[in-house]
Length: 230
Image (cartoon, rainbow, N blue to C red; front, side, top):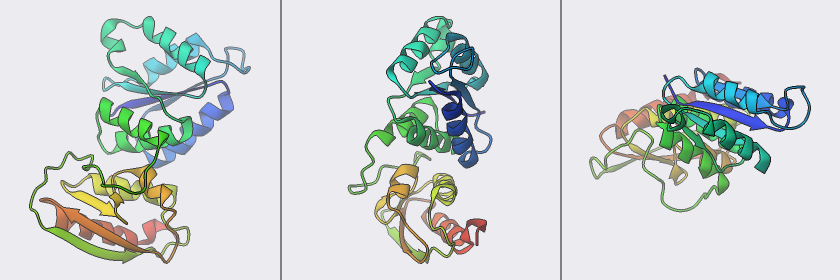
């Protein structure tokens, strides 16, 4: 089981589109949509949000992404009608709906808990390319002091765009190591995508921790494979 997501939008089409996009990068994560009114118009629906909360909650919790202020109000009202136990498993993210949902979905897919998925969603508010990378989602300890370095070149035509970036993050997060690519946290989908790394770019990978060597081997192999693309 993993943390579920609920996308609340004033438009059913927007909610469905965000669910489709995020779902393509995080197979197996339950992402529900609550878009539009009960009659299919523009607005939000208490009943649709309540049903979405129930659909997305597998017991690990739900992170809710909302597009406009009144969507937040509808979500908050729906939360008020949950019993206390269910309400404790729900967080409303303060994040842009598309970027937040994508980041949250990938974090959930890598096994992050409720607060970790919420943090991933809210990281979309301000993606910083520079600065020290955060610890990996795998919760790695500092481990051995040695920092290993490897290089690999993007061979797939589209470079490190959304789907390959999501695969890269999921692989990086599966190891007990602190990993960076071009100096940014390799477990942060949004930071990686903000780099805009295209075909032919040489990636500078570093890793520190007990799984540093196998982590770099796996990431280099993934890059060399072209992520299954041309």
